Structure formats: C-alpha cells, structure tokens
Length: 83
Image (cartoon, rainbow, N blue to C red):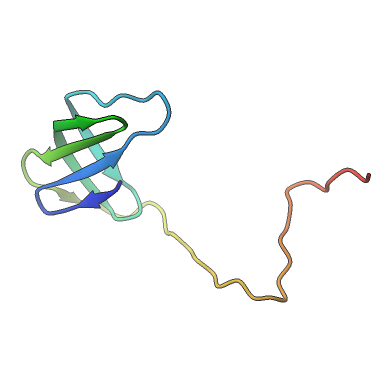
C-alpha cells in the first residue's frame, strides 16, 4: 500500500498480480477491511475508492521493529558452507 485515506487507497501490485475491478482489501496489521472499486490504473499501481464503510476488526499481526545495535550479530537460518 502506498497511500491510505478515509475514502480510498493507492496500491502497488507485486509480480504478475492484477487487481479485479472490485475486491475486498484486508490490512491485517491495522485491523482494517474495506470493499474497494478500482478508479485508475498506472502500470503496477492502482487507485481504489472504498465502497461503503471501512470495517475495523481485531488486528491479526503485529509489526515489531527493533533497533539494531553495533554489538548484535545477524543470524542465518542455516549455517553457510565453509569455503
């Protein structure tokens, strides 16, 4: 999502996904659901307006951001192969 207002949003589509003319937008981290209608398309971006009222629901995920300290070491899921 690029922009969000009370009446609509500007979305950036990833990969080969193409938005249908109408769809339901669900933003888990904000607890927002809205029925949308596409009003413009420019390349991989689409502009939508909300049809009806947006719905606030329980947040399903939380974004966690931790400050990186110079003493912390990054971790890997698996150890790199020795060269």
